[in-house]
Image 1 (cartoon, one colour):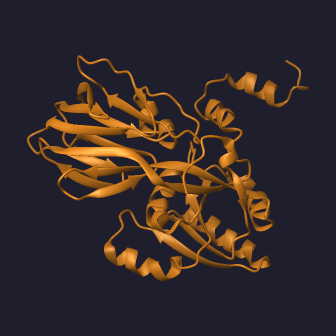
Image 2 (cartoon, helix red, strand yellow; image 1 turned 90 degrees about the horizontal axis):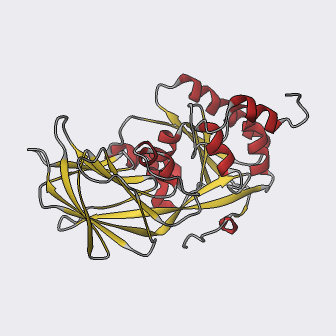
Length: 310
């Protein structure tokens, strides 16, 4: 299934029969919310399992998870966008949709706040929610056989402080830049509100399939982001790294060491990430404006309450 480049990508999501609940290990507030959600779901004919997420995933952890994941229709993640990314990495190959409950300051993947939990879950369990698709990108390390997908971004960055690295960037075989920088970010529309944004990249609507290429702190190089067509292929080659090379990161979760001369090919994935929502992404720009502080607080208050006196 491929992503449609419009809000019509949101389709009806049938009430799930088996739900997974996950939260960061040792995060007591998130654990309490998961317990409350589990208890609340008891009024519906649904089975549920709960999973604390460790800082890193061992193969043993992944194997133990397999039996719980079987036939799961929805994974609810309590925490922040980082928790959602980690959870998605666990279930991405199984095509399981994700619903994020936000406890952190920001949250573009974990959209539901604590006060909205019961209303959102009621809509999910009563067939009134939607399934929204987000683009993924695939990265292949040339000659090494290492290939992974990313929901947010793929980053080549220096592995120590003190010097820049040099990266050649090609699009569809055409050399477009040599970046002498701290890193180069290849981001999806979903990732456009993450690391890429902090490096000066633009914000894309999450239904957009285009890919962003953004250098981080480039030295003697223009710092423009490039918006690359979804059907194009990007090749990044590490020309000069630190003495130990550089690091390749997929969503900040999986890492791969690169030596000088190594290349990675990045393109849009044939797969998509699925998220459950109650609005289909229609208020994305409103969320961006409020969470990134683009509007004065007094204006936001008047705008949300037009009858309120100035």
